Image (cartoon, rainbow over the protein chains, first blue to last red):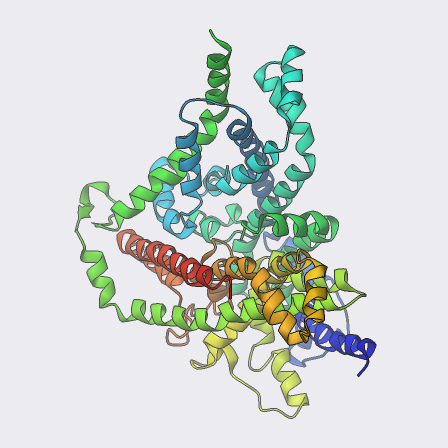
Length: 271
Length: 298
């Protein structure tokens, strides 16, 4: 076999695998466009494609509200995470102060605590402070994460001290040096961190499931799970809800594919 | 005030809020979790009691917990090598082709960033014995229909396969970077020395990607987001009517913790499960690093 033929041969498993990867999404979208009877007749392609399923879940069920809840929670946690991670990362990389090593070790240690261990005391905390069924209750665990701090710390190391000193000579305060000199250099890193964090929060399930019990406060994944649990065999509605839940992540991925893949690759730590 | 002191003051101001968050929402709760594991929980704080190792003793004779632990062994055995080997295989294939690399990379990576809840329901529908498309395809091909998630013997491998499907792209990306970092001259040198493609893989590729192999293995086992040891969302949503079933065959430790803590509100018992899980993750990760690091030079 020539090398060219060998290479062509490699596409066979890749294409087959690609079909396996994409098919569940295609089938989900196709099913969401079918009226209920077609679920039973096992039609491959929708015979009478309809958007009625989407109308049903948005008008008769609170999917719209859940979508906005998820958007709000993901947006606020991402904002907080990016701001707090960058100022902490900057401080650890560029300022010296007594106790720096202790602070570093403390933050590092939190990276190894699994969420599963924390949800129980978080829940006890949420109960005693009345945070159950509040937005604050859903988002407080995501305000900052050690991963973000270390990522930003790594990036701030690359900023030359001379640049910061120049800012100081120009009369900027320490905060001014951070905000006006260092931070603007971090735009690509901040973008990647924000995107990953947004997607991670959008997909979060365990904690929002625990801390919410009122329908109005559900995030989209929690709402989808509990709605689907009650929907029985109305797979047309379930798949419409699932499509709605998947859609934003696919859009974000297509728009920022490069940044996402690069940050996964460079950090590898996120995991 | 000296310049150094003033800068240190700024530094403390900068990290005051973030540090307080780390302290009150992560460090303190961690100790609370350890403490809770030694208590009997009650909604009324006055009735909570310190019970020593009673929760742990109860776990050792709790057949449902022990079954979940045994299940974890099977999940690890199937899904960890599955993800790592397939991820590496895909990366090698992508490395070898010229056209369409970006396309395939995107396609294989896609399931990793989509919400596990939605994906699980989509798969749950596809695998439904009577209405599912997988059995419809099986019938077309003349194969007998399968019970999949409704069978005690098939359910766990089915869940594990879906997990592999979702996370294989993540490992592929890790390996793609590692492969791209291998200097081409090394392959040239190996070819001059008479190495075939297997020899090059064995003596050039494998030793050089070993750190990534270790990372991939460790993340697949115990990472906070994709680690098999933390498997929960897929298991709960794939069989929402009877999570962990049929007859406990797909139950995971985190699912068991969730049910004990937030269905039966036995938070002390759930904390004991979580503490054991935490210790298991630390121990297994440590062993994996030790065992695999020794093999680096091959």
